[in-house]
Length: 70
Image 1 (cartoon, one colour):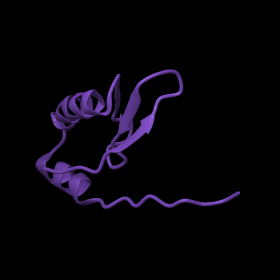
Image 2 (cartoon, rainbow, N blue to C red; image 1 turned 180 degrees about the vertical axis):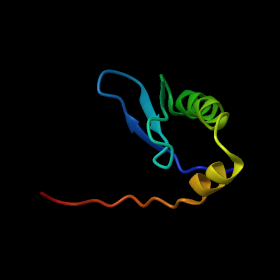
Image 3 (spheres, rainbow, N blue to C red; image 1 turned 90 degrees about the vertical axis):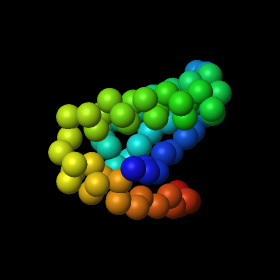
């Protein structure tokens, strides 16, 4: 399964990784590569208790990132 991951610079240090289609599935790392590795593990644990249909539906969500001015 493939999931879209949002990675941003952390407020204090490192990088934060989040999976928008899996609410609350967040991890972090000192580098982008470490954040990706950690979020991969977090996703595996997150979907462990989900039904196959729910996992498939979540992986098919296609979130988009928009930039707005305020």
